[in-house]
Image (cartoon, rainbow, N blue to C red; front, top):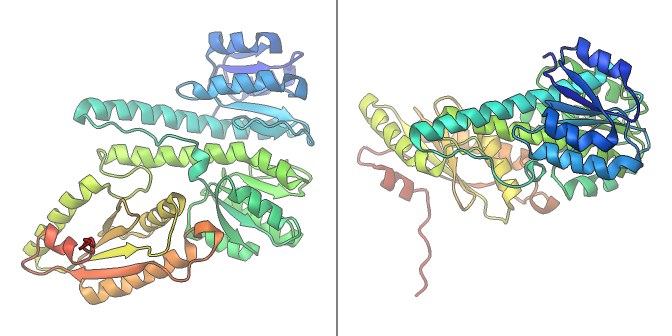
Length: 415
């Protein structure tokens, strides 16, 4: 997409080439401001995006304040900052790019951020329409989008433990020791970023990066490469650093933005379904599941076809992040005729439409195996077994309550 103006450039001296490039990319108007007038310009111009032409430590505090104001706007205002290769400036909401990166790369990264801004504006307007039409309030979950992010970590070199611990403290981690395993993970699940560590063959890494350039599903996925010397190659959201912690510092703003985009897409899908979908999982919410099951039972009885219900329960302790990750994996693996919901205890109820008990058993066993090998590992450890599965098939006398009662255990009452 061409850039949406106005674009605010903040610089110590006129950034003529940058302003010209942004104008040629479709941004209008392009307005320049100095650091002393940056906050005033942000309030008066109300830009679509802010570009910091060069950021040094002397302006870090002002940039932090500016970024907080831009992030609080509705829709948010992306802030992109050019940084020296070794600059250790922590700006969690500022999208970084190396000072020596071509302006075309800056524009590509800025365009990707503006698409998320446009998505947020669309979600906001649709949610207001849904509230006016049906009285349903559709809001994003509170908190940092990074808390719900999942990152694919690849590598097996000496820096891998440092990267693994640092990433795991902030996000969910899916580990892969080789590029081939990582490619299979990308095909199987949704991730918000990729961190490539050391211990991998240079040719394999180059081929892996080519995959991001050529596949539209992954083209704008944040990629952090340890030890990379240049960010001038594709994909557009590639960041490089020689130090593991500096690499993660550079990657986190891009991963946070991607996680925010993912949450917006789930919320938009929920709005389009009139609030029936849970925006955190993509499955039906609890209020919609019962009526949907009732309609499915009625339809199965009229057509004389089978219907089965499965409950996937996790008997070992899992945290909220792992529980939601399992539900999102289920949403990706559902057939068109199936529907599911996540219960408050973390278990998942799944209805197999047009399916008898034997076929449902096979499908449920495959899904349980997929969850065991693909979902996040609770507490960083691999569970001893996958989820336990309870199955029931529809009988002619069944109602919603009787069918559910056969898969949901009764609470234990103390004597």
